Length: 249
Length: 249
DNA sequence: TTCGAGTTTTTGGTCGGACCAATTTGGTCC
DNA sequence: GGACCAAATTGGTCCGACCAAAAACTCGAA
Image 1 (cartoon, rainbow over the protein chains, first blue to last red):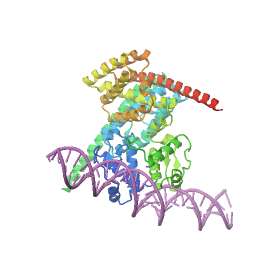
Image 2: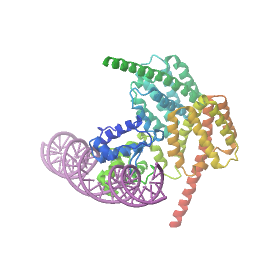
Image 3: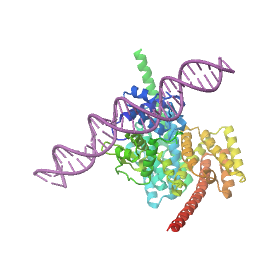
Image 4: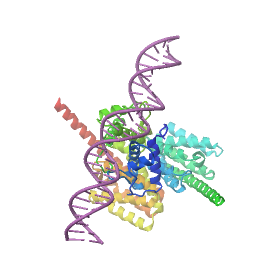
């Protein structure tokens, strides 16, 4: 969050946002009035108004005199994605899959531009990182650091500020919020050599399309493995809940 | 905006946001206090607080007791991009270039997924649209509609909800806000047949990488032409301003 | 039974003021 | 220059008032 203790405004806005994202209010449904919410949260209208303004800015609430309403999630701002991810821990595997697929596309595109634009020093650093990553005996946390470095290098070499913004946003607000993301987001061992080799080759040959395809293939393999892990985890928790529920009955 | 007349809160938040984005406050600089802003805007602290909460959510202000400060733009949320675009009209060609380059990457990626996942009916519609676009005698507004339709179709066929969110966000909050965007964002006449033909071929062959590359090439050509137009327009206006300035002196 | 007009109620928008805890600022002293 | 302290300023929270816009309700006519 914002690096300060959550205020009353934060609390109200988070709770209402989660209710909207969980479907408690469908698009067009009236939201509780400011006065009702002030009573429910035992606070003043000012804090409620601030909270609702935040939801409006996220694009999930439409505020009008006569009553505020929920807005369609599909018309929300991109910032809503992180809040969707935060609804559950671990996140919903399907949602994770969709988000990571888009992220992979961006990363792939950054790689294409990097292959075409990187200077000699950047190219050397990419080659060094890829060589290190090819060793599958690298400790997991160190491997993760190298992957981050590679991602940052591609973005830097792409010379596109928007990519930097997008990468930072997706990384800080999305990836870092996933439990065990450092062990989750890894190239499958069996595929790492060919995948990384293809990237190295494309970079050496300054072949944008090949770099894009190779990085797409890498992120796709990482994503498929991660989704399988998340699904297994979800199934395990469901089984625990089922057993726990049977025990309580 | 939100489809209601701008409130005092909106006015304050917009004005402060533009000041921050224009560099009036560097990262770490103190922002005016709530009471100072209430006086400056001749309003109450409540509206100022609501406005500042919006800036905090955008990631460009850090609010703490003791004084609020500007935050680094590069750490802002993605929503800030549209506000950067809105600073000038026409937008800064370099900024437009960067944003559109990223957009092209996303569109390219959606095309890759669409090539692999589209059903027969979607494929037929893509082929029909591409055939229509190949005729360079299509009226500009109708051509624009076909391009929109193509974009929507790729997103639909990609079966990725996040793409839908991203496309809507980028389109509504970015492209549609560019003056004359319907005439600005067009494939160059001389290149349209080969570019569109490559997309059609990739779709027919269900070749994801080829579709990605072909769509990337198309968006790149559109972007280069649009940037040239924006730069010419900017130069023309600067010349006008120079002449106007000389006239005043 | 439906519809339109009028009335009433509820809604969000705006405002002023109060109070409190946290932070900053300025003064003093060493 | 650093420590300490009091004063000032800051954001956070709260209350209540008032107003215009919208929704809900009522009633009579068709």
